[in-house]
Length: 150
Image (tube, rainbow, N blue to C red; front, top):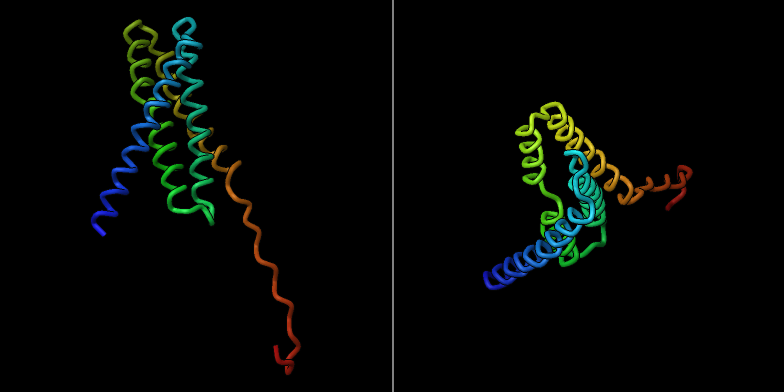
């Protein structure tokens, strides 16, 4: 039992490391392809909003009935924590706000920070909502007349 637990922990750490490698590389590429314009971090905003949407979708898919334990680990730990944890970056967003503050762009720093968090929450909600299973209520059982055995 302990051996299985250790093996599962090692597997999950491996998923995070590999996912983080992929996500961090994708973030770096995205920031290079979409650099900031006039002090506005275009790439950072796009990366964090897209990442939040995908994380919402991954969460919804992983919560579906019928998704096995191994696949839940790959989705939640490998993609959610690893890939998307490396892809999105709260600390980079905080640094972007700090840089804007240091340049005297106080209003822009606050606006970008507020807008990014708000957009991320909405994007995660949209991803989760779009990929959540459509649960339909079970049909009402046909009524059986009294005195009739079912």
